[in-house]
Image 1 (cartoon, one colour):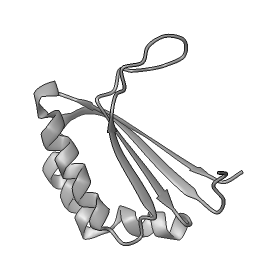
Image 2 (cartoon, helix red, strand yellow):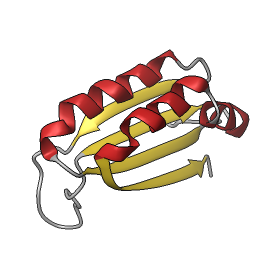
Image 3 (cartoon, rainbow, N blue to C red):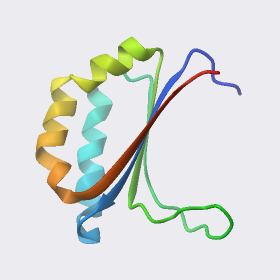
Image 4 (cartoon, rainbow, N blue to C red):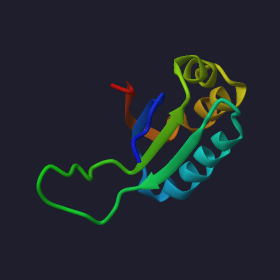
Length: 102
């Protein structure tokens, strides 16, 4: 299936302490209550290696929106802002990628 009319927000997280992974994942699950999100996937690094695979991050968040306006609404949603305030300190690094349908 080809995704059309989709704004993709993909964030990779590196944790300060790997023991906090489940706590962090549980926090990300709270984002599912945000109504502007079309689809969401919270994941951990798969056990795959080799080639171009970068398995250095601890947690991945992939969110699909219908458009950029929905994404922008998510960015200022109180649930998202609460997540940042409560869990940001658990991360040593994060990288976010946003893309739209070509």
